Length: 445
Image (cartoon, rainbow, N blue to C red; front, top):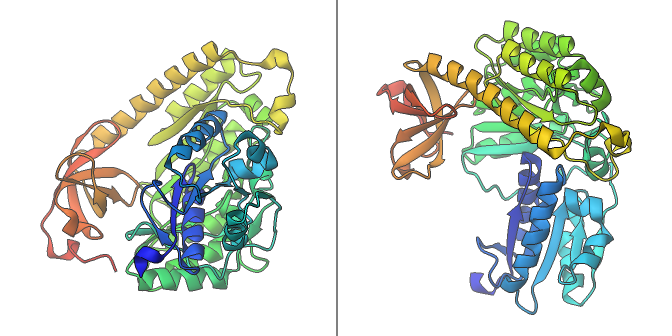
């Protein structure tokens, strides 16, 4: 009986790769008879899948691990997985005595056996890297019936001075193209038509024979794939072949999230980003020239060690000149074990200065976003209905350009493609009205 099955609750923090890893863990445990539950209370297994990109994220998770103690039965196994688990390893077992398992991103194959060991009182930290592990034989338990994530590349070789990813995810390695195509066919068979390819530097994908251009064309050619996205790319890996594949593969959406991090060449050099301000702008120009109407979003860090007011001003002018559709903005967060922690202490930017710069950057980004969005009012776009919105009877939908549009409707419309006219904007999202055309109403899949 289902009620006799052991239960598992997973709480996920961080990036899309962590969401995908949680789906892999759920699929793995389902093979061993586990049943997913949507609350931690009384679950047989509680897993916290963690992020380590910023200190704030880690502190939040540490607090949550403490809170989860009150939801546990005497027999509950509590595990911490993901990047923070990889970074802290056995130290997590010392800090939280009620945690039984600490498992890094390459250790999920052993999850069922480690849980069983924990039931007999064993506490384990498994944080070894496995450069051959891509979980090809796992069948993910997908939490979203509209879109699907496919991890195609793990780890990173760039080693930017601020970034903990090489420490938590290891060196770069790519899955075989044939295996990605097999998974794509399986996803389409489930009725899912939007796919996002995942990697730490996804466009550096190379399986020994095929590069990212080959991958885009091959996935985009699978019957039933209607939308194809990818994240996160590196500016240095947009070769002419990759850009051509993007422009000529109809399923590839007209949106690129292109992390800039800073608009100052001198700051970029300290970050070891391996491109200049001018080279980044040229990459953006090439993408826009090949893909008309391309939406461009980015990541930007302020307060990196040594950042002067003049260098920060260069970031503001880059934001205005490039004209981003939106940006994720952050204050620099020093991570233990990264080269940035070894920069001269005199280069430290105070929190007060960094906070002021972040506020000014957000204002600049919002100014540009608002202008772009206002210019789009009255235009029509195909949207995919993703889920019920938080507001009443509205639905959350998304354009090919990755813009969120709220429209009236009910949950029977989830998974449909509709044509909408943009009628209003809050500055970050849109409201829309459905345009009643017969061709705009196919079910996804």
